[in-house]
Image (cartoon, rainbow, N blue to C red; front, side, top):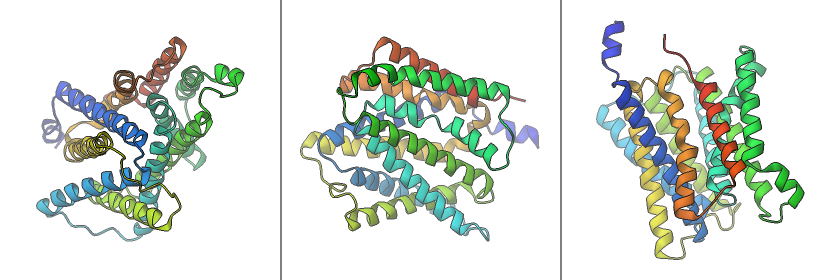
Length: 306
């Protein structure tokens, strides 16, 4: 049995390369989103297009594979909550991307492993080990440098009045995503991954439709103002859809327990793309802080292979 499972996995180098490619694709999606938002594209419209197209692709794959869509008893309300949490996470993160440098938004948003460890402990799980606490402190120290907190406090936020709101939205996205992961692990473990992903995207799409129709965000469904905005919107849909679909199809063969930390290169890829395409530059200490955060997250999520 163990031999059969191991031979179904991709070779380690291929798995790492594929995960790195997916991370870069997700990073490109956020860069494209910022370009679209700068061209007056509504945040709700971006999430609506992204989730809708990806849902159609995944639905086609699930139907082609003839996978049953039924949910185990007692999981429907948890599945609904999961979808609403992911919708909130998407909305908060995209709203942050529209306000602050994309790399900083992703750095703060990617602190969810630390928050998940604390949430698990608070809800009766294992207490964080000394190693975990050490890496959490490392991540927080790196964030202080990356966000240039001392400089912002002394400058009273004059350089970017939306900085505090953007950071707050990114942190909210991290908190919500940590809750979503806890629900996935503890309440929806019996739900098949394809069904869970498909229903989550459907709930995200429906949530954006309701939010747009309610007028809670007056400019949430605004169309791009120019051809470049439309191109950016199309790019974010393609980049996210391709990355999510490939992850959906290949995750059983990627040995995520060992290789998942590779995905943490997303903030680095975002930093490079933001510098090249958006001219979003960070200072020396901010770059050092970003490196510290990424290293801390990788060390926190790394698990040795048995």
